[in-house]
Image (cartoon, rainbow, N blue to C red; front, side):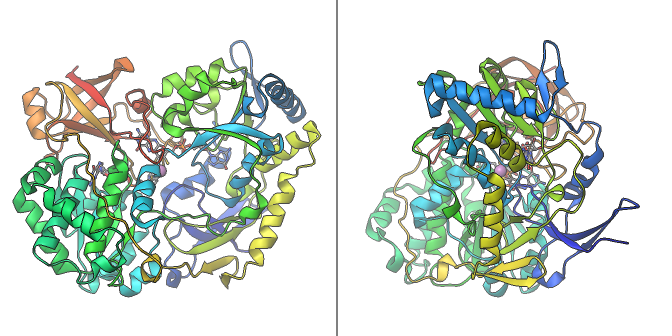
Length: 631
Ligand SMILES: Nc1nc2c(c(=O)[nH]1)N[C@H]1C(S)=C(S)[C@@H](COP(=O)(O)OP(=O)(O)OC[C@H]3O[C@@H](n4cnc5c(=O)[nH]c(N)nc54)[C@H](O)[C@@H]3O)O[C@H]1N2
Ligand SMILES: Nc1nc2c(c(=O)[nH]1)N[C@H]1C(S)=C(S)[C@@H](COP(=O)(O)OP(=O)(O)OC[C@H]3O[C@@H](n4cnc5c(=O)[nH]c(N)nc54)[C@H](O)[C@@H]3O)O[C@H]1N2
Ligand SMILES: [Mo]
């Protein structure tokens, strides 16, 4: 007999937040899927999401705790693993107090239960951890500077009131596919789709209109557009009513030279004028901020200036004229279940590893959940060394990832469909999904919270992560703000920032000092830009065939200068990787001179990036120069 249909929610750190239904037939082991009703506007899983089910029995999946030996890892029992970990934590406490134990968590799963991964370290009095993230911190900071918070424009508002979308480097056709049906709807109503990019992308060809600029140039372009809107008296009539510093902002704009702004934005007057006219003709325009455009040292100013442009274009007056970046998918998580431990220390994500190494009091143990920093964080090779030098490190994951391989202990975790109950929200839509166990877990693997449950017992703590999860589940089931639309699918009427009378803005009165155009510092020196691709999420491509050579794109002008044609082999080197690696050159006629672009998530890409911190504890992945020479 077939089991009942159950809701499943993709755990990926992806704005899609896709939800569908599945049922499992125990005797035959067959699995069926079906999409939920179209009216909710939520997609079923894409091919990346469905790969979770193929990974289940993948030969690379680990299934027992593994301890590092002289030359390789060997299996041990769970109790042995907990004993070793417990002893190491106690040793950390003895030597440095709570700060001697560190915890690092990243974006592997956006399920609510992952909020409890810090509960055990919390119960030990505290720990050392990272602040900010590899992803969105700089952009969030810019939006907080502008609006006091990351503003939310719910998707249903966009669907009802919106018209045109301007993607500031948001590559939706690659990284946010579920937005496309809604965008098509807007287009059918006469809305236009525009994109501001630094290179050619699938979104560029999909949009109606496109503009190209220099990397990091958006804030200058946005400032130019603001200046023009004010000078030509085309800004929304009452823009200043909701702005704390209208005079200061207007006089700052007056002091700016138009030509300078265009040069620094890397865009011609003709192109900028065409965008200006487009904004007026296509209103209301929702500004969709991408993640790539805030991976600069001035990432927060990029978002802040686009926020200012939206305000001048009537974001507070006209529905559907706001700004969208991400939003807190955990907003309904009952935070009262977590308490702040007495002793905490956090280092900015961008330099977390270097700080960890030098920390005083020193760090003795490290636990890693849902992250693969050796692959995904700047200067990954150095991170590998830092982890290996700790007295004890443990990583919970599904395979021996680049990071797990550096740890003393590796623990096999469970996939989202092997555990539950759990919940997931989205940083795009406003639904929450409650999930239950769909498929039986492998015999010897345990979910992250069960791993911590065993550790808590071994340590003799009264903490029960399992109990926390069940309390969370009950609280969410009783959450009056959640309306069950159908079995296990809940809608939350998320407040629309733009329509609240208390919402206001403070506009930027500063611009970065650096120049961004023609900046290659020598014939073979290029800024390196890395971007996300459709086939896999972040670093999770271990179950895909590896390309022999990653592509690296550069402008026709630069290719000509250094004598390259598409398909030529080149070597990329950096200050952190003098040997470098080989990639295949491709020419992108949309690109300007001075930078090159390659996909993120390929094994060696972060040997080329440099650890730095941008305001808001962001990680400016695009502030690196590489040497690119013909092989
Ligand atoms: N398929 C798939 N989906 C994903 C992910 C994935 O890896 N694969 N990752 C998820 C995650 S964690 C994230 S953070 C998001 C990322 O989602 P996106 O924001 O769409 O992705 P990025 O590739 O980081 O950046 C988008 C674009 O910004 C451009 N760009 C770089 N610098 C600038 C600039 O200065 N100005 C402008 N205007 N454009 C610039 C790049 O060329 C790139 O095409 O996607 C999520 N969804
Ligand atoms: N050069 C460059 N680097 C980048 C980027 C870039 O654009 N350029 N993008 C950055 C961005 S936006 C992001 S968000 C980061 C992402 O950085 P990470 O979060 O480190 O990315 P992932 O590779 O997805 O690693 C997550 C790991 O968690 C594991 N995992 C998934 N679910 C679970 C679970 O339930 N439990 C446990 N224990 N493990 C789980 C996965 O198997 C995977 O190994 O990468 C950043 N790195
Ligand atoms: Mo991200």
